[in-house]
Length: 141
Image (cartoon, rainbow, N blue to C red; front, side):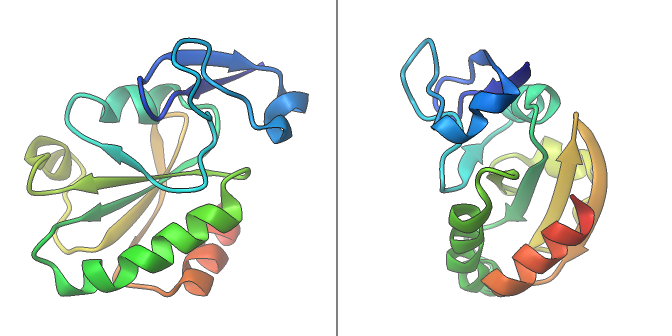
């Protein structure tokens, strides 16, 4: 069994590993548990999503005023669409969630951090295109 955190209501769902490819839905709200677009996280949802999600989670730390962040956003969404069954993708606005950004010592944005079982396993700062995001992620999965 794999635990998946719902990207909408953040309920914990247990899904048999052989059913991950069947587009599982949340038992509480019916949302797809493996969306093909990034999930928006905040101070309230970050720890639950990162800590309890059974798949690796790639988080894009960004801010609305950041030009490179705006340029990378479509590429991050494209990578999420391409790889949503191997990893979950999430975004965290560092201006709105300053406590989380400080905890992970985000000094430049965009910064991507790959988490596995709540622990940081890899980090990359700077904007990448969709292919670069996918190649980097595949190296660290």
